[in-house]
Length: 112
Image 1 (cartoon, rainbow, N blue to C red):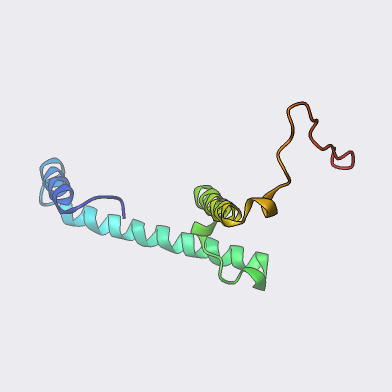
Image 2 (cartoon, rainbow, N blue to C red):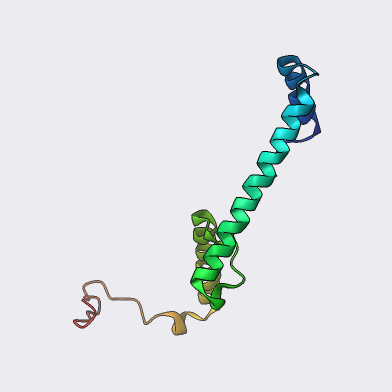
């Protein structure tokens, strides 16, 4: 989850034993576990409150769905897939003929 493997955990455990001592370590581990449970409970409570406030349309809402990085990544991937589909079409269906050397591009007064 955090990119921490067995060697890193071993080093962290040894540092913890040297810094806090073997007699305080079990109590610190118990406190860390209680803190993790409390944070998980708070996150689940926030998610449930958000689901209740937003209504039944968002019953499957997850907090990770609200991460801006995930939202941007999702839209970029969709845009790239759409561009790939457009590139697979024949040129005649994608756009009109290329402009001549001194020809002005088409101008839509309603769009501007």
